[in-house]
Length: 139
Image (tube, rainbow, N blue to C red; front, side, top):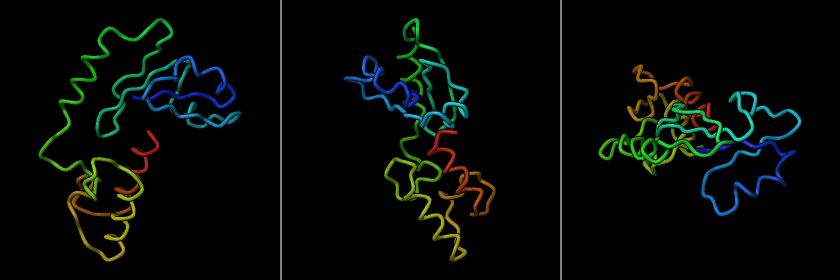
């Protein structure tokens, strides 16, 4: 769950960011590349599943959705406990640059690891890295 704000409005966001633990992406104005890529509107709330897939984009100007808590609980329950997340090469529960480095190292020495095969095509290659980068940047 995260929000996208424009740096040009950063000084007026404290009323919704103070005291919250929700991630906020401050998009660089005037280009606002992330804002545009996500087709964001002011006060949109984005909810992703544990694999980075967009589940919901809701404008919260009128308040939070009534089913927000149940939606989040349902998504949390869908996270596998006994299975490693695709792409989480160091098994830290996160997808980040460290995982990309580890997959890159395997590709360079022509080794295969099922965890790094994000698209499950049986090949460890740059396509798996691109998918992880998209998860990291939220696409």
